[in-house]
Image (cartoon, rainbow, N blue to C red; front, side, top):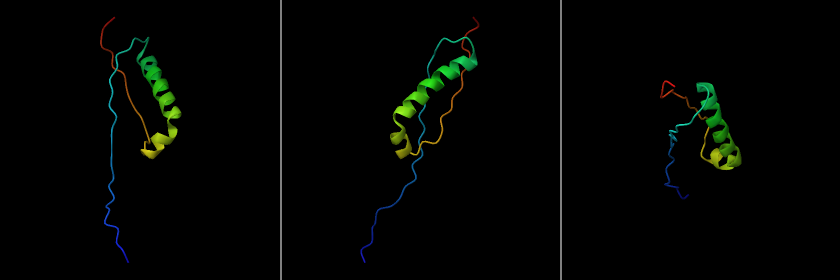
Length: 66
């Protein structure tokens, strides 16, 4: 019997991003980016599944007082 000496590894990864956009509200800003990310994921669904991607999340913070 020949033993396979290859080891298994559990790889965890995070994709981090930051963008400044104009929007009418926090919810609108988050929704705009969410739609873009969902489109990218849907167009590359097989690749995201191969990578084990299970979730995305983000939140907006107001950066000025206008």
